[in-house]
Length: 273
Image 1 (cartoon, helix red, strand yellow):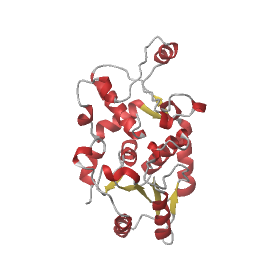
Image 2 (tube, one colour):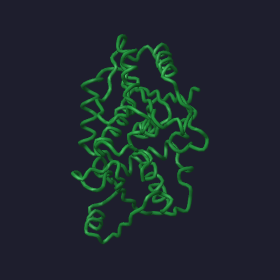
Image 3 (cartoon, rainbow, N blue to C red):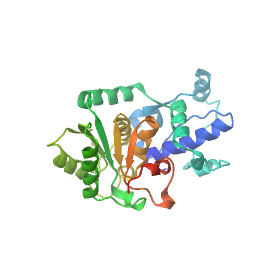
């Protein structure tokens, strides 16, 4: 499927919840082309994550082919008996992430080193702005509104002394740096896969698939390490809350009612619009 990376992971949580309730063991793989790199193999989930729940025997049976594998293009093709998205909440979601989706050590080390080098010892406000096509799923937030929300937060929370900025739009990062770098450090990951137009990164057929996925995961995990997060509608930053359930979140715009799924649905009580 050409849905975004964290939409894939949300599907995996639905599968995990089904397995929890039916004494089954899931094994997650994804071959969606937008994130696959031939140099790294056909399964992009395996580039960055581990199936924590699999025993050595499980892995041997899968690798040997004794467990059959079929290909699907979306979760509806599984024919699950319940709407598991509606049963997920932040507590259950964080539990399922801890149990089933392990971040590989190479990724954890990369994120930890970046944060310690650039933001160590700081009280950090994470900023995530999802632009490009997101206006089809939630009311758009103008840059001026986002800037005012950041200024207001900093005025009310004087202990914050650094910003970490993540966005799929290069222009947003540049404008935020220009507006705030005179008063406090503005840090961002040097992503190569950002959009300079209206096509979102995950739907663009240009660029390096492995890099797209890695940069999305790195930014999500860096936001999870912040002391608070100010965000607009986006699965990426919503997943930061699942990786760090203690993360304080300020949510600027709820998605439209027909676009409201987990985990954004469970952040509505932290929405300030």
